[in-house]
Amino acid sequence: MSAVKSYDERSIWWRVAADFLRSRIAVGGLVLLGLVVLAALLAPWITPQNPYDLMQLDVLDARLPPGSQSSEGGYTYWLGTDGQGRDLYSAIVYGLRISLTVGVGSALIAAVVGTLIGLVAAYAGGKVDALLMRLVDLLLSFPTILMALMILAYLGKGVGNVMLTLVLLEWAYYARTARGQALVEARREYVDAAQGQGIPRWRIVTGHILPNCLPPLLVIGALQIARAITLEATLSFLGLGVPITEPSLGLLISNGYQYLLSNEYWISFFPGVALLAAIVAINLVGDQLRDVLNPRLQK
Image 1: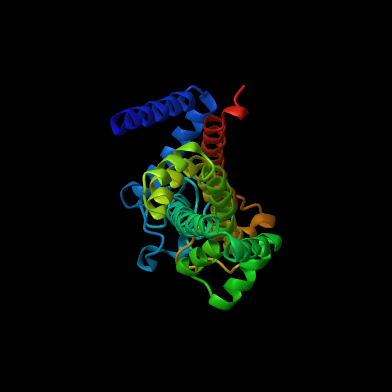
Image 2: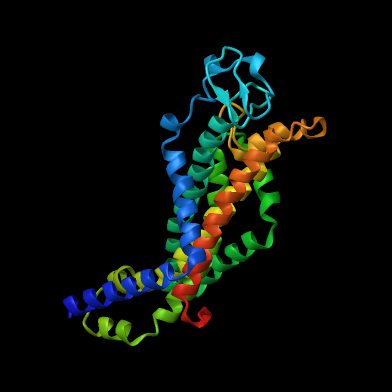
C-alpha cells in the first residue's frame, strides 16, 4: 500500500509540474524569478562595489548619471550613483538580497507558526478553536500597514525587527487556511480508516491531514512572499524598515525620491524596476501554481 501511495503521489506531482510548465507566462515568471534569486546569491561576485562598505564610497561620485566614469577612473557606473556615491547597480543587487531575505524568511516562519495554530484549532475544537479563530479575525480586521507601523515604532529599525513584524501580521492567513482545510480533510474516509487502525491522532494530523493541506498553503506562501517584500519596501520607504547602512530596494527608492524634481530620476527609477520585476515574477509563479493546484480554476 505504501509503495502504491508513494507512486501515486509522485505521479500527481509530476502532473502538477507538467501543467505548470505548459504555461508560457508561468515559465517566463519562473525564469525571471530565477535570475533575480541568482543575482542576489551571487552579489559579492557580480558587483564592482560593496555598497555597505563605507571605505569603498566616494562623495565625489555622488549622483552621477548612468554611464558615468568614477572619479578615480576605475570603472563605469552603468546605472549611475545615488546621493552617497554608491554604485546603483551594486546597491540594487545587494538590496535584492535583503528584500528576498525578509520576504522569504518571514513567509516561511509565518507559514510554520500559522499552520501549527490552524491544525491545533481544528484538532482541539471547542473553546480553543473559537479563541484562536477570534484572534485571527482580530488580526485580519486591522489595516496591515498601520499595524506594521505601530509595531516597528516600538521595536525600532532592523532586518530582524522587520521580519518579526511581518511574521506577527502574516501567520493569521496560514492559520485560517490550514484550519479550514484540516476540517475538510478530517471528514475524509482515509481518516476514519486510520482511526480504525488505532493510529495516534497526532500521527493522523501530521502524516495524513497536513500533507493534504499543503497545496493551498503553498499558493498562499508564494503570494505572501511578494506581499512581504512589498510591505518591507513600503516600511523602508517610510523610514521604519531596514537601517540606512543596509539599504533594501524600498530604502533605495526613498533615497532617490528627494532628487526626482532635479531630474535625477535614475536613483529611484532603477531600484523601482528591480522591485517590480521581483514582485511580478513571484506573483506570476504564485498565480500559475494556484491554477494548477486547483482544477476548478483551470480552463
